[in-house]
Image (cartoon, rainbow, N blue to C red; front, side):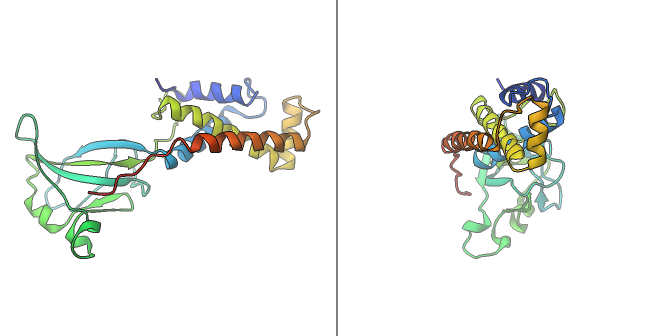
Amino acid sequence: MSSTFLTLKTAVSRDLRDPTNLFFSTTDVGDLINAALSEVGRIAPYRFQEDITPVTNAMSYQPQTTVFSTPTAEIEIKRVELWDTSYTPYKFLYTLIPASGAYVNTSAAGWECWGGIIYINNVVENYIDPTKHILRVQGYRPYAPLVNDSDVNSASPELEAAMRVYARVEALQRIAFSRDAFTQWQTASNNLNVTPASILSELTLALADWERRAKHLQVLRVASS
């Protein structure tokens, strides 16, 4: 079971050896977690399926509106199907042809997803009956950023473990790449005996751990069909 934002903050703070947030505030830790969620989502995106209710005379639709309030360019659509809801269970009608797989190179020949919006052509729009048809969409998207402490991380436990490793890398980079940040960290964390070379060595090991985990997180994208 995935963790809440608050649980993740506690875990990451512990990973950073800063459980009481003497140096990395809870806001900082939250930023590290969302940076990790974004990076993990780039490698192993969330796979989704949703049913979109068509609208009369509409030729464009925004997918995943319950997750993202604005169009999200990182959303990848691999399949768009037309289903008839007047049957029980719903009846599959046909798979819409993507513009990239059409006989001519034009958006008018099939559907395409551009800038986080799905566009259909006139042929499909004319055929759709909004009173009984739905567009069933499958694809990949980024993970929703965590905002409130009660928000539940939508990444799997495996991806969550990788997120914690990446968050540590980001934190060590903040310390290692700024003299002022390093000095403040030494004082706040009572690590006056730690040298910049020690931090760089720790960062190198953390990066190696992240790169090893990242290689196992690949999600093969299926071509649009």
